[in-house]
Image 1 (spheres, rainbow, N blue to C red):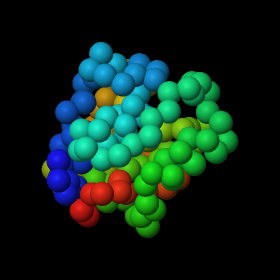
Image 2: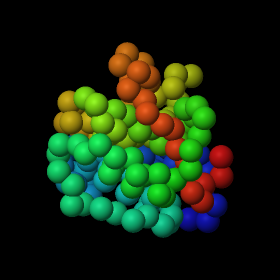
Image 3: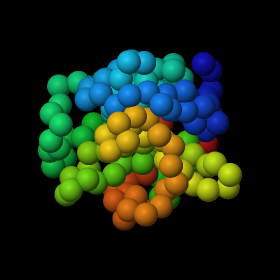
Image 4: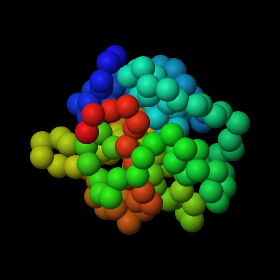
Length: 140
């Protein structure tokens, strides 16, 4: 896809809604949050370096460093951008910001829901947000 924009990012992420959560999953039979990030990159024909040799327990910096190496920092949440969240004490969860019915949402493969969901960016999510990042090669 040439010159994808934020709508393309959101549409690509939404294609995965309902897909079962599977640790290190990278296909329609199961996907985790990092896999969703990879598959959206691939769906938009954007370069991505995938890494699947990670454990379910987070490490202090590896997850965030890997995402930072392939994306650009944004000062605030915006549709189509990537959210990086802290769970427990380390950044180890990610998803995409979108808007639904005028409400800022996140699309993410969420272990608690056992699938990819889109839900409001509310409750505990704002306090867990570590960084907001943009995919390189997308028009914002």
